[in-house]
Length: 490
Image (cartoon, rainbow, N blue to C red; front, side, top):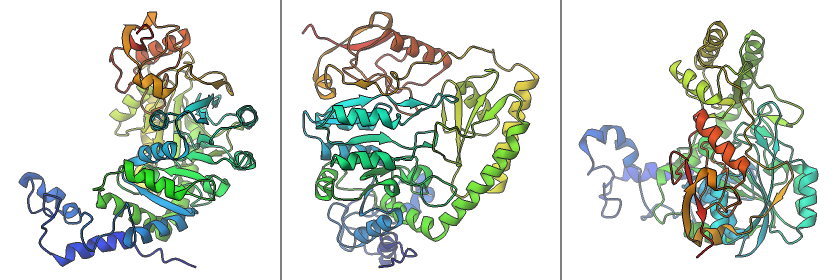
């Protein structure tokens, strides 16, 4: 049955709620904006009027029967799922829900090692015993990607009782692999393929962008609809396809994790993001991708010091909405490029020791693209003309083990979480089991997780990243001169 994507049932229900002007004798306490900070009211008033709750006339996220149910059905149709769950805690909530839905304490699951921290948190709460597989690394950018499929097939054969295969695709840099073979491998073993597609909500929605994970056979897909599409921050979706995953179990777990008072403006923004995508966004996406690619191709031969990555044979697909920029001459690290572009009015999405990434929307204006191109040309000219920063040899930091290596920490994430810890000097931590998550951010992929053995390579990498200006999220010691290890003497 053809669905009417011009409708936005949840958003329209909130508009009716606002138009009715009934006096609110229920939560929230701002009473549709009648009681609020006066200096900020003008800025917030529009959204406060639709900041509703599960009152009469408004559907319930945890038991949808009306507007939310219809909005989720429209989303499932738009993205090619059998069922879609709306998330108001970002993809973090989706990943944790997947872990708790699939894994009981002690269960094994095969997990790509370069996952977002939320996956590790979910596995910790589930009491799972993940078997990690080291990712591949794209040679030019040094960005982690899905491991060679031969390694994954071998890992599936060696671990017969895993609850599924969990990968990140695309990575933060927009690199994506054709995962149809992985889906076939998993389905032959009757286990699901789970894909963290946080940065690929737009995939499959226009010809110039890569195909979606669902179209390639994935069973569970988590998407950050707020990252590459137009939903508000924290608004994401969890898509399910096929019979290998219980929708009822996922609904039960999400009912435990998500607030009983979810933000209806966030939920409505998911409804509107889907409507915008289907009615207008797909054509905008195609046009934007084509114009960006033309500008990239025109710009690339003009650059003398900077480079924009154009893909490689190691990667099946490249997201045209992401430009990966680095220096040929190593005149600047990625962290320094972040600051230099910031001074020119361009704020990058991510930086690492070598690269920065510019992330474009699905509907970019020509003047904004030109502003970015001009900033790239200006910085390229400056770097080529005069040494703005000290040149340095960018040593390849060790973020992961050799591609395809299988890693199972001697102590599970759940056990490590409960164990006592002690602080030691970083240089003395070699051989100990890590007691905290060491997390360069973004992209939020842990360098070390609790229960993992600390090696001399880890110590060297932490020092290098810190010296280069990397940001680490919530370490026990912000200087990273010390680190928490598990205290196994107690």
